[in-house]
Image (cartoon, rainbow, N blue to C red; front, side, top):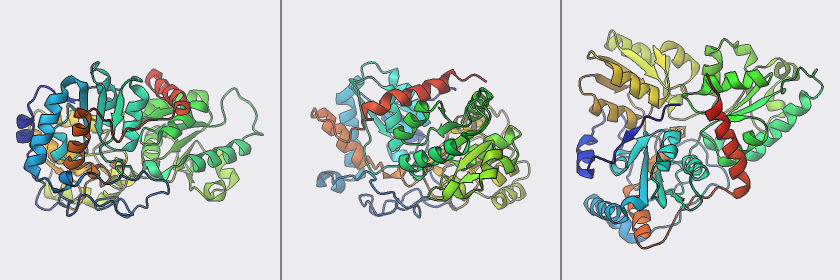
Length: 427
Ligand code: SF4
């Protein structure tokens, strides 16, 4: 797993603002979704996951002082910079690749969720880790951080609709049904089924896989993790992202007929027992609403408009999209592939718009554009408005920790085992 990420620490905020002063291509959905950024509607709000339903028990962000709601962008900017300077090494700010630029420009590190959680560990003096991402990312940082460090999510309502598609009780029920079904199989020394979870899940599920002989994967190491699992088990239960599971297993030569989908709340996940007995990878019915928007017609159009275009998509995209693309890989892969291109190239990229726009600004010698002409940003990530960042930082300056994300002690150990197994899994 690569830990190469962007270290913003040595660039001034002003430099970062200049570097990240990006414009979305005219035809894209605006990245400015904030007609009223303070609303926490029943759904996930505007953006690509707006039609997903928020599960019961979802964290609610209480109201924050009016002064942050009323402050202009310029005032928030001044206050965030001042608070950051006062805090110095005592706080580290992490910005996910998909985070909006108005927030990312204050980040000390920019990267994917696991890279960021690890980057925070390099800041020994940091008492607070401010994670400008979504809930599961802050939980991962809390699992990996020291006990004396606080992990803060500036807006508690910044969840991930994909992570929310697999909840603890539904996965537990699935596990019980599967283990009962496989109980009569002949013992060949391997486990009947090994649970594998994508990093994009709750700490509760990371602990679940750790407790049940499984492990976590990222979009960079999913194939290695599946190989690890197949050395020890006859099958894999993969959640929550069906697409990452299917794309990875297909590339390993596993036939689609041996990848049934598990639909929660249906008996045997909506499958016949024989199908599950013959299965190699059981895919949870989860997906990312951002990456689900890409389709093969967009790729055909890009090829028509830009002959010779290189199409790179994220493996959270549907299988037909990955099949039609030239390459598929994690955010880290996409970034490195573009950085490595020596000749001016047209890149059609299938991932979240904030990251694509940032790459386009960073590499002006290339023509980098998003595959979906009307793609919207990740709406959950978008909930981290600069006003929330100003609020949590100024609270820290005042000696108060707000919006702390604390993974329960009973989940910490098992979740860490699942992460350590991932790190130990070798290609
Ligand atoms: S881009 Fe998709 S998987 Fe990533 S945080 Fe947003 S909803 Fe979740």
